[in-house]
Length: 95
Image 1 (cartoon, one colour):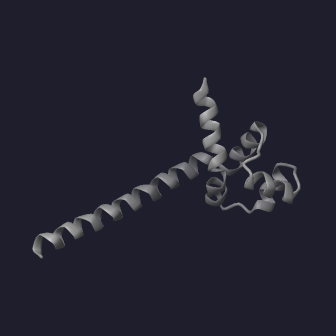
Image 2: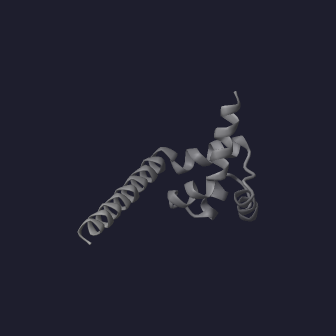
Image 3: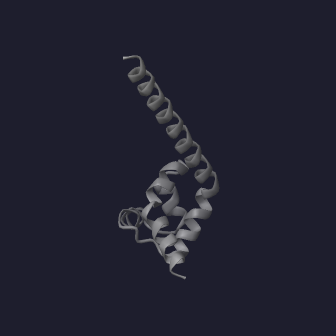
């Protein structure tokens, strides 16, 4: 049962990432959640969204698309790092 709470904490911790990746403006999201823009900013900054607000927010920003995009970006970064490591090893081999 604790894993559910831990997962929720992870979502709250990473809410800024999901909002940024969604491409939606904060004003739009605040309006969709029926809250003043400043309240949204405050909740975003302090990870203070309720469960119901998180449900609405993730429904709006289509998290599955963002997760796929984030995974792709992570894979691209990993691929670039692997290439750089291989190049460094090759340089050391010939030097």
